[in-house]
Length: 517
Ligand code: FAD
Image 1: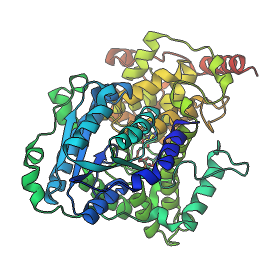
Image 2: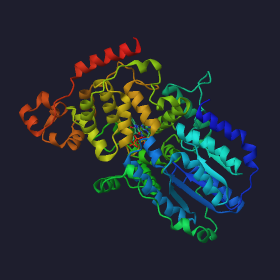
Image 3: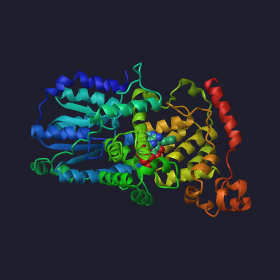
Image 4: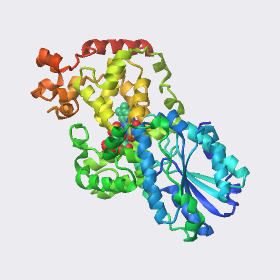
């Protein structure tokens, strides 16, 4: 059985025993990737339980440097999480709910430490939202049992996806491996189960006595950034102004996007030089915004009041959020895809290049392909890259440079503020043709055509590759072909590290040999 099934089995097996447990001194909500008070399933249930049993609610978050390491969490993302915890602590304090945050250095000790805390607080109920990463699923499965042995009921509920993983199945009862039919069934499911988009009430106020009782927790600070994820002062300043933290920010941004840009999303989403997308991924990844409220807001703005039909921009945006669900379902069903394995076994036989210089040139945006270089520099500067450019750069690494896609997948995770294991793996698998429902291996993005089509005026390139700023007109896409070669060499813009025609042929041959075509 898959880790997700083991967890769900364990919850089912222990259901009756957990239901018998009565509250003692408090109820606990354990925050993870759900850093918000609004529309938070587990937090809502924890609050209801606390209210019903007339005991206070305590919230907790465990900072785990080793988990950050294992998940390749980018320092910019860790900083975003810690800043969000500050906001959350303040918001919860207004409801007299204390938020306890502790760093646990050794990840193996997390379950034992949680048990200790629960016992210290006299908590007999702890609530948590389900996550789909294997390590988390295994940890939670162990904890459900360990809690029960101490007379504590741990409840793990579904929250992050609009439709719970495992819910949608093909006619033969399997997980879909193709997005389009999966999406049709996702839409149909949500329409026939309107509760999928019902929002959970925010937690209610704790009894005033909680203030005094948990004074120590209210006063306790949010821990410092773990040393393995620290930022320089310059980076802190830069990233903090770009990525204001917390759920209020997320909601404001969603409202603005729904008012000003969503209607035109189907057209503007592909132009990296424009602000055409929502930039909400950081909030979905940290849980400062629920996918439910985003889809609900979009649906309510649609003329049909449905997920499909009506306004094209709205439909398309909803279908992009559906991709997020799709990849989480994929990860839950085929956990091996996020463990360095291609979806189809024959793709494991492709012989990759491990050219360090080429990889470095790609990382730093020095490939001589302006659109690729602009995109990589955007990533390095912002911790974020436009979706069109994620596809272009991923394809370039895997197909033009024939460098193992897993190196790129890792580099993205280590730098993205919105790093999400399932979506990142899905995007790399799609681009390198090694994943679930990928683009066929023989489709090889031509970076020049992509550049001409999606950055036709060269605005994006000029912004991120400033040394090319003075190049006029279409020459921006291929400066050495039509620009002044001496001048380009003087400004230090590199020549192409690989020629498109050669790269294309080499790629086709290598993939064919690998997969046995
Ligand atoms: P919008 O266009 O406004 O879309 C709204 C939301 O829909 C996004 O915030 C995101 O949650 C979801 N979404 C959109 N496109 C996709 C997609 N293709 N797959 C899954 N979800 C999607 N997204 C991440 O959140 N984290 C990642 O680590 C990540 N890595 C990627 C790696 C590669 C190689 C590729 C090709 C795509 C990756 N994506 C990832 C998907 C996508 O690029 C980003 O979600 C998007 O660019 C975020 O910008 P936005 O919030 O403005 O998106």
